[in-house]
Image 1 (cartoon, rainbow, N blue to C red):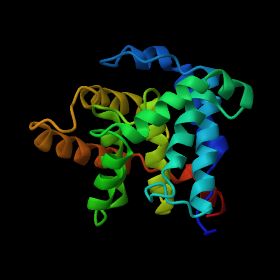
Image 2: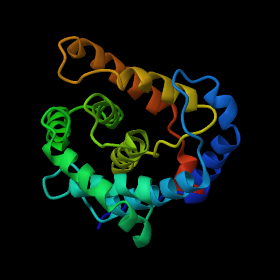
Image 3: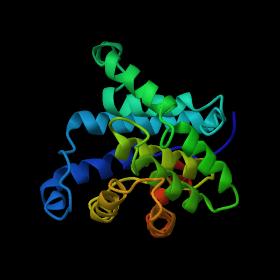
Image 4: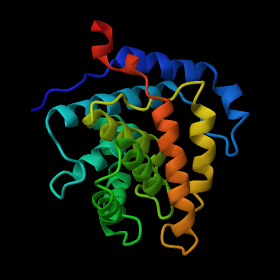
Amino acid sequence: MRDGPRLNIAAIEASLRSVQGHFASINAQLVEPREPLDDRIVANMLAGYRLIERFVHDGDDLFALTGVDAMLEINTTVLCGVEAPQRREYASHIDATEHHFYDERDGGIGDLVEWYDAHATESPWKRAAGVFVRILSQPQLFLEGNHRSGALIMSYILLRNDLPPFVLSPDNAVEYFNPSAVIRKTIKKAPATLFKLPKIKARYAQFLKSQADRRYLLEAESS
């Protein structure tokens, strides 16, 4: 166990609900329109935030060999929630995702952990942004739900460093989604990627830093 900031789930939910209410206008500004942020997605994302908070406070290292299973749990949570019946319904998809996660040579968990370890001296903002870029670029880390899982894994990295999580809002949604449309079409191991992805990572790191909002942490209420 370790001390650290607790998430203000009520503030996170309020932001996601605001995105939900403004989604039509947000979607009109996106290069690639997104599926609506319905109640199921919001509930699963809130469960995901609670999950990463638990991982941080339990001292779980998602980038250690003994901890990478936790990333699969994040992905399962954002797609299927926490209820057993729903998970049983999607058991074949969960199983296929696990095989992809471990077996994909160019974009599986081995690639992500290797990148993370190689950038140990960088700031949490850059490491979080770089992880997000690795998750979304081709081949993606998960079969589905890479945006949502990536946002939570970024938030885990930030929270582990006593920084606020990334939370989608009406003000940041377009800036969050539009660059990712480029990332999703980028192949990790392609020669041009050696120049493209580091630049995208640097821009995303600045974006994450600009979005740091301590109202998403309960400690902010007592300050």
